Image (tube, rainbow, N blue to C red):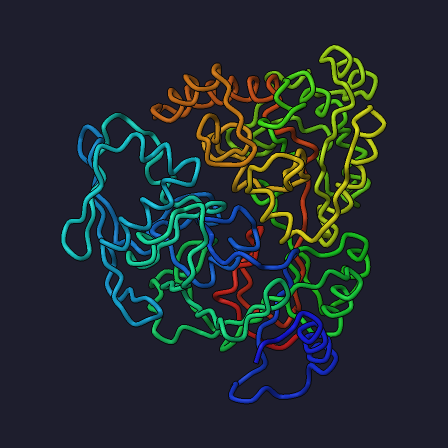
Length: 530
């Protein structure tokens, strides 16, 4: 029977209203966690959305995992060997890896998955460009032979966020272009996706993967033993922020990906709730995705005008992050990370609407329509969007604000149509340090001239700097190159930043084994007593 949206919402409300009703065929009630926006796209390679990444970590597994100290450790791999010239990397899979359809994970699956990811992701494309060949070596081994030095092979294979190089069967990876979502979801991760129960955009169901063989080491960040300790998991969307807060307090849900900021004082007084303390690379940053291919943003002066509209203090205060924010941070690679730099940041240190208006006049802006897609259902993006809309209008931009749910916006965002055919100009977005702290994955640097993302910038000055950075192995020289990239990205306004902040998750105190890592890590969690 087909479930309509109205029926799905009614069923969700009824379930949350009666959490004590026992669920048939389950040894315990499901673990329920609330994500920021609805899940529509199930393919973590095709989709740039965090909610799809969250989905991916339940269903898929990856070769290398980042631990809580930012170190990269073998996950699906037993380990690797490197030649003396560091051009040949030999990898071996650990035993016991199997997909949810019962087939064994082989090196053929790994190579096919990496090639698909490498045609989509910023770091992946650069690794593939530096690779002479990638071949299998028996059923459980594969080899990457580089054509030239590349300083971040393991970092690429262990990329923790969008787009994460998850492994899927070769028959699926080979059959689907990376910009199109795969139709069949088969992973080898700790949980199995229950597609027949899925209500797109609202509720997603999983069961424990009984055949999953975790590593022996304790769970640590995204590394170590991924032990699924709950029988069923439900990933829920709740656009109503007040309902999210009430549901956590009443024990109707277990975990909020983003705790409503206005409710934090109340949560702190509640002995049954724990608030995340993740910081550093786990912090988040508001940004503005600009369509460089659409006028008027093919003009750098107009893009710089957007930067002058981004008063970080006002944006963070408007979103409720005044106490959790870093309005003085002007680093493209985020403050508190290894590549933090303020080089070139004097241009955005004191944003000014008067300066924005002057830049628009200098650019010859003639009131061209600007389509801003405003995510109404996102607790993080909706308030940011409201401040952004106000300041862009006050600067003189002719805004056509089109409000919608994030799932719909995300699908339009990856398209390239003209404005009169459903295209877009500006999207308020938010990313984590996992995405932004490395120049090769940073949204305003790592995608330069790749043509594989909708914002589509290509800055000639940035290209040789990126090439030198990706080939460099010395940490000091890498930091110097990153500082220069910071300068160029700000000068060319590739992906304007709008304020760094800590967005805490919150969960019920009776949960044991929660990994506080900046986004939902569901393995290792079990229920105890409050």
